[in-house]
Length: 127
Image 1 (cartoon, rainbow, N blue to C red):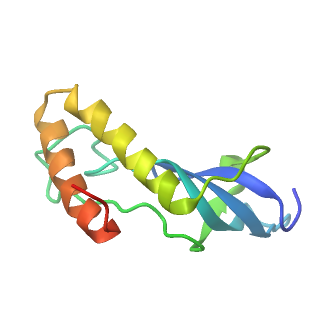
Image 2 (image 1 turned 60 degrees about the vertical axis):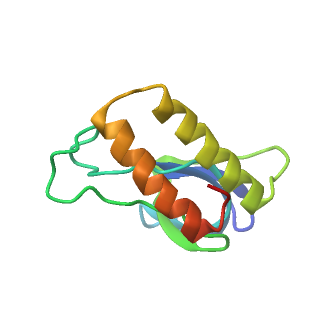
């Protein structure tokens, strides 16, 4: 892949569309500029997914518009499609995540929904 190319990538548990800024063939990661959100990151402890009885139930924000992240090359795939607006993609990703949690009916889902309420205020999204 080359500089300027659009890619999909995963970062922690989120999925994004971004522009390849610094492909580094000699390394195992590349710098990607985030342009849209496909899947909002899962809340809580990454090492104990689905658990609420952890030392810290972490609030995980989506990467911001134009934020640059080091992404493992194994998590990059070429993207060919229309590039959605960042804010609209974030709203859509949050709503999809919320819908999946509402139907789950578990302590983890309840804790995740609570962190999402807080994040929506940070994102300035309607509750």
